[in-house]
Image 1 (tube, rainbow, N blue to C red):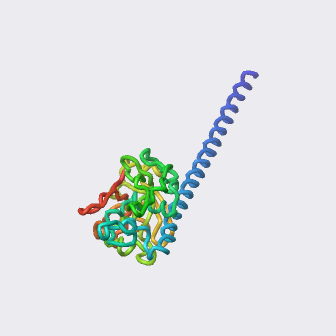
Image 2 (cartoon, rainbow, N blue to C red):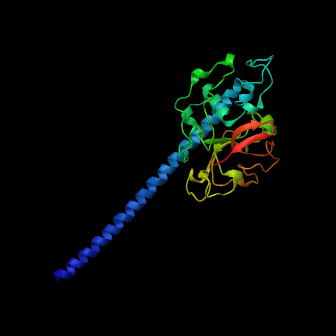
Image 3 (tube, one colour):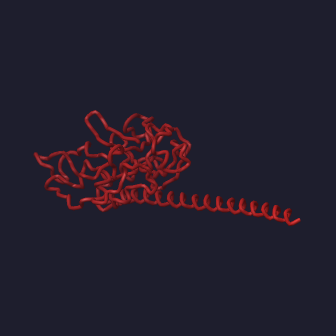
Length: 267
């Protein structure tokens, strides 16, 4: 009888252990979900805050969002003169956009890095040189601020390229459709599912892309598709009117802009 009681007690202990493990799993999953939602919320607030700061910038800059090529213009009478000369389109790169935003006190360097940034190449610029500002020498932001996804980038977020028809028609608060993507978590090349793309690891599940996108009217959404709102416009590919088309919603990194066009980057 004692032997049977010991066996029965052992079974009870096993059941209790299983129940405890199950409870712990539920707790861990709940905490993990809350952690993810917290990160998502912080990332969304950060992205929206950057875009809102650009809108504020436009209030005192002829209704235009930050445009590096209009700050550092082409030489006028042989010299770079603030506010004089033609726009220099080659200056409208991702690095210059965010560096100008920081120098203009629109955003802080820390805001340029995503909460869940998975790439070791992307780090906060914790030594931003505000003293670099020297208009007389043609320096309007810290030139050492970088945005190279394959080397060193002080920026996590993709943005609408500042070029072509899209720039002319959309790079101002009062123009364009509210459903145009302006800023958000970056995505894979061409908006094609790629398990090797590090952008799939920004948010789980890691077998497909998901992220936050801020639209023209200032609202933001957590999206799990390259085609927000169920449309036919892939926000990580030029698929409507080619590079810079005003009807084409596109988010990317602009590493360089040459006479032959933009050099864009994905990772």
